[in-house]
Length: 82
Image (cartoon, rainbow, N blue to C red; front, side):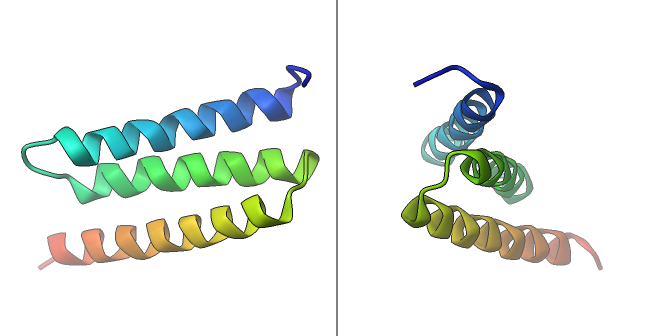
């Protein structure tokens, strides 16, 4: 494995998703906006990385992960608006 830009971006994306997972398990009060933003950013970074180093199973999972994060963001924003 080389440490090219795609791998670095993919590792950073993975780190964001791990932080989101840790946050969801340790936060006393969950902020779904932050949680879904971290997951969306991480998934998008991994999707970009996978366009360079393609893996079909990972790409499908990240697209679904990003879609769920977008739905979560929508619901989170919708709840906050009167």
